[in-house]
Amino acid sequence: MQERINKIKRFKRWVTSEVLPSIRKNGGYIQGQENLDGETIKEALTAAKEVIKQKDLLIETMKPKALFADSVATSNTTILIGELAKILKGNGINTGQNRLFEWLRVNGYLIKRKSGDYNMPTQKSMELGLFKIKETVFTYPDGHTTISKTTKVTGKGQQYFINLFLKENN
Image (cartoon, rainbow, N blue to C red):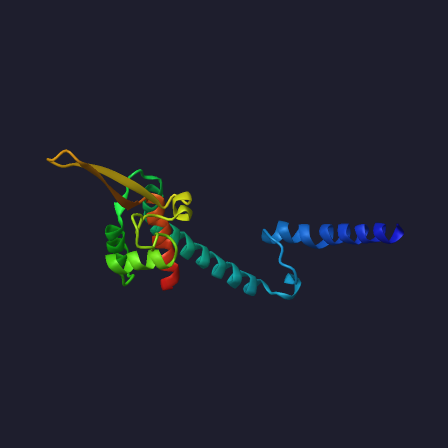
């Protein structure tokens, strides 16, 4: 018990004799600063200010992109997979519609078995909210109808795949 009290007293003495006076004098405390001269501290603060300035500049340049990404992710507008391929191409990803379809099938986002649901989204990708299915009914002159299903990429899916491909590309 006495050892614990001694530790508390040493800690209090350290705080009141080193830390608080340093904060009052310099605006902060750096462990081992007693070995630093004033010029070194000023250089470190100047360098830190420059780093903060560069990061603030980067944040300012990224704001429009972040705003665009947020608006795409929350939009109700869907696009065709071929249009997503064009967006990816515009972002430096070497792909086209056919290669993107193949990649989506191989990586489990679209169904790859040759049947009526070929190129339809997998359950996993639907649960992630990456795709929607647009159904169009065609009525022919002889009276019969057919339903065409088209896989479309949601705003969330657009952001998901762009980020995924850009990470893979870097």
